[in-house]
Amino acid sequence: KAKSRSRYVCQNCGYVSPQYFGRCPNCGAWNQMVEEVVSAADNKKVGGSLNGISSQPVALDAVDLSDNKRIPTRISELDRVLGGGVVPGSLVLIGGDPGIGKSTLLMQVSGSLAATSGQQVLYVTGEESASQVRLRAERLGVHGKNVIVYPETDMDLIRRAIKEVKPGFLVIDSVQTMNEPALASASGSVSQIREVTNELMRIAKNEGVTTFVVGHVTKDGAIAGPKVLEHMVDTVLYFEGDMHHTYRILRAVKNRYGSTNEIGIFSMEEDGLHVVDNPSESFLEERLPHATGSAIVVSMEGTRPILVEIQALMSPTLFGNAKRTTTGIDHNRAALIMAVLEKRANLLLQNQDAYLKATGGVKLDEPAIDLAMAVAVASSYQDAEVDPGDCFVGEIGLTGEIRRVNRIESRIEEAAKLGFKRIFVPKNNLAHYQPTAKIEVIGVTTITQCLQQAL
Ligand code: TYD
Ligand code: MG
Image (cartoon, rainbow, N blue to C red; front, top):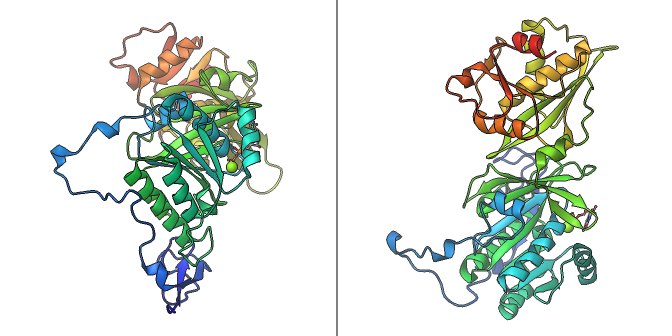
């Protein structure tokens, strides 16, 4: 009988050691080392090529490019994030909080791919029963014999099913529930996740099965398991948004076959996810036109300008230190803008609690939102209304200067398209600007100047 021995694996970073440490010597995390029993079988390579063909070294010029074509999923916002469609034989990892809509998205993708590609989709679920999956599919309007549901977690059986069904696409929901029986450790452990992902990569590459994998996220928002998981796969998408809002945002954090700039915007309805065709309009839908503490920014999300409302609420601090609370906006950026307003625009904000929010559940993280943030704060503090036909774009420097931002033309055009009357932009951006759009463009050089003109 094969001898087994123990090893210790850090559940945070995947570091392996023959010895136990209270604190991982690699990543420094405490109490993350977990004992795993290594049997002789673990040292053998699990798996192996299904069709017996292994790849060969080949000259760069002779590499076959034909299989780099993309297959559109026909879900336009997903295709946008993927860079036009999914690359055949690639492995796409989708992470997100429980209940955000990962299974829903992948069922809709399965239905669409099965209907348009003529190939079968094998939907493996370790989380739900076949009937649960069917109930959801019916709600989503996904039918057809080309989506094969397989409630299973054993990778040996899944390998066999792939051999029998020969699907064009594979969905694994989720990687944490899958189990490679040759390994002694439990499902969801670092070693299992790593080995299952390895195996899925091999299946995707060698058999050309395009694979989507769901990954659960931990409390701090990373995909559970070692960070190496994200390094192993081709594409990592995060599905995010406020569970209590209808909007969901799909973001690429890694894409071997395209840019990581684009976001996809969906709304979660009774019958599943719908693409949002005109995000600016949707995000402004609930705006109160004459409220104070609200300013509109044209933010670039990838190559697409989107109008978002930034809200600020200032109220006198009752005791202790002034609070700064933000939703969808970086906390440090908010603190910096408040300090600049205090010092350069003479607003006494240090005894004010501040609440800042990007509406619609979006996260804004580009410098061009500074100006709208400052205007919203000043508007709330002075109880002065911002004209509902105004919008703002510009980065604010520490001396209160308004700094240039990128893609000013497309921002101005989008604001004009939505019927805004005036847009405040950095004056430096206008040196070569040819007015085309039907909107008044106002160049500003300092925050004081902007506040004087806007409030
Ligand atoms: P789900 O896809 O199961 O999330 P995940 O796989 O990421 O955990 O989505 C669950 C939520 O979505 C659930 O709270 C109900 C809601 N939902 C709808 O609003 N409409 C629908 O058509 C479906 C299928 C789910
Ligand atoms: Mg799910």
